[in-house]
Length: 380
Image (cartoon, rainbow, N blue to C red; front, side, top):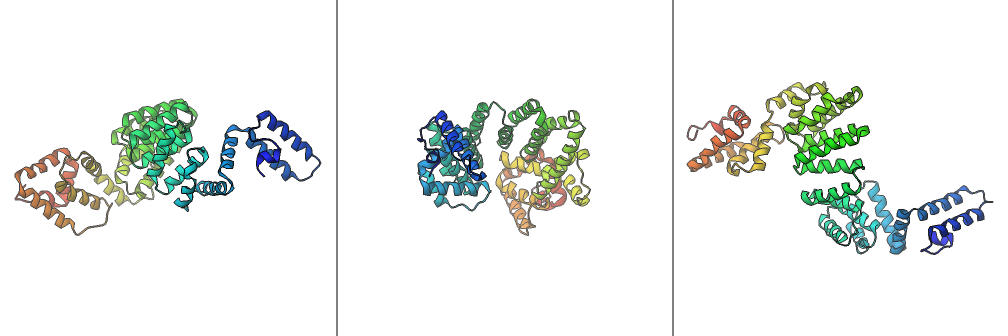
């Protein structure tokens, strides 16, 4: 028996009819001593009187009992954060996803866990064409787009969400700001985060933490200036204590993820705010000594202004000496191949000077640590 049948009303009943049926139901059971019956009646009433909950319930009824049970099972599994999902179960509900927001939400979420991004994006596009892409569905869509680095479209989706929410939902804003930083929209990200710091004054510490975290893992050294100004000049004593704890935790987390470039920036820019009593001092010294080298290599990789024949052995060696990869005996052969490539044509040797000019920190470190790289007489 469904909720409407319990109340003795039609599925199309108005809110007034449901209220009347609810009062009669309560009156019929007023002499009973079982509180669970009253709780059951009250729960039905709350569902049928809330437009969003009633819509979700009606969509479940339309699926039929077996599919509704499957939908509820999938919802429960997703809510627990479990990856124990089977795509075949999701496929059984897929034909109903364009008619039911509830089903569409489950399909998009399950697709994320199961790496079925193509199916999720195709569904979201169809829903958008039909003007059925609600805010929650649009957000799931944006996460899928971000996962495959379709940043421009993901940003467009977040802009629509933020506009509809009038920049009031903080979780959405923080995800949007992080996406902008990940997409290298550095200026826009900086402008947005600072605006949210001012608009959401009572929660500005939450905004600042996300701002710093995104800057550490996706930004550049120059992007630290503004959030650090807030840290040094605008926070009260309590916020300062929380910021100190956060930066210390961030430094430890960067070490766990072997983000030595991030640790270097934190040590340079936030040393007075970080408590690292338990960290190996030799390790910290090595990080300081190699400051800027990994950043230069990442820049070179992104810019593609050094041929791979030159770049690859240098890049892999930098990863080894910075402790981000296992020692590799093939490095000697790599540099012998580099020597051969440099001797092959005079034009190739010009890249040594270009490399020295563009990436001086890396050049000096390699020259000191691995003379095979830059000290061969034949092409020096």
